[in-house]
Image 1 (tube, one colour):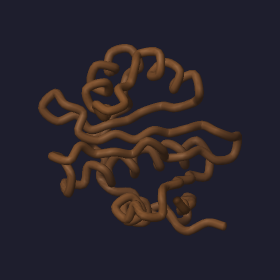
Image 2 (cartoon, one colour):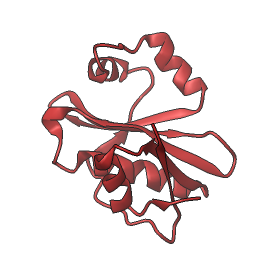
Image 3 (cartoon, rainbow, N blue to C red):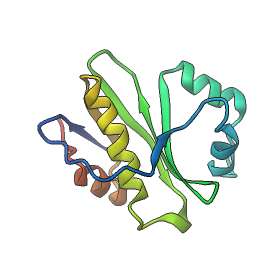
Image 4 (cartoon, one colour):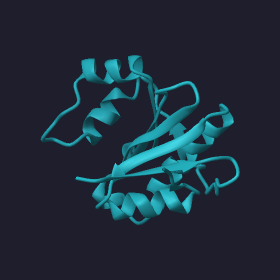
Length: 140
């Protein structure tokens, strides 16, 4: 499947309200993330811990004690970091939560002085529209 690679810089970033987004705590929020993760491929505690070792930091929107949407910042190189692992539970879609977590993660990347990147499958129209809404643009 082809992928789309997008980038966002301070010049193109269009932040949106992310007042309901917060960083997920590695120790205390694992149960929320475990419940959020797809049942067909459950997330183990060891995988969650390893993701943090591998440079991922997660943020999310919690509604009524449930993780409704999440995204990660992946620190994969010195100059650019990826907005990754973006997902919203079906019952919380079309409420702006996906856009909020993408905006929150992107702002953190740009504030750290990095270029924000985002890579997704070419058939993921919802994610492409979400990324473009906060200022991501097609990259080479």
